[in-house]
Image 1 (spheres, rainbow, N blue to C red):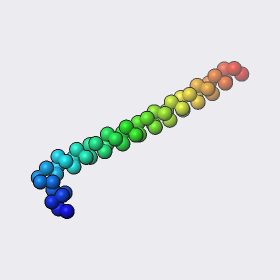
Image 2: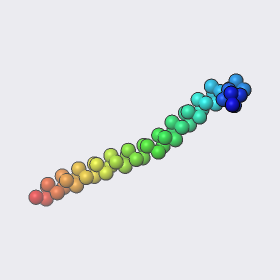
Image 3: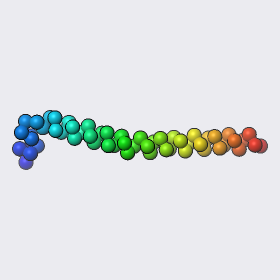
Image 4: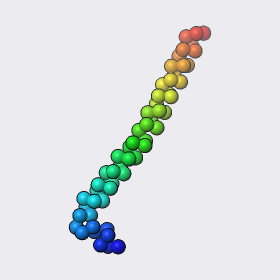
Length: 55
């Protein structure tokens, strides 16, 4: 197991590349969700303003 984790002396490069890849994948999952939530909030605020203008 130790040999696998050490990866022939390249463990720093291999594990850091796995870490960077994980961060990028998580960002690709989280960013659209946050953007959608922000967009829905903005649309709701616009709708409330439009309703107040009608009154």
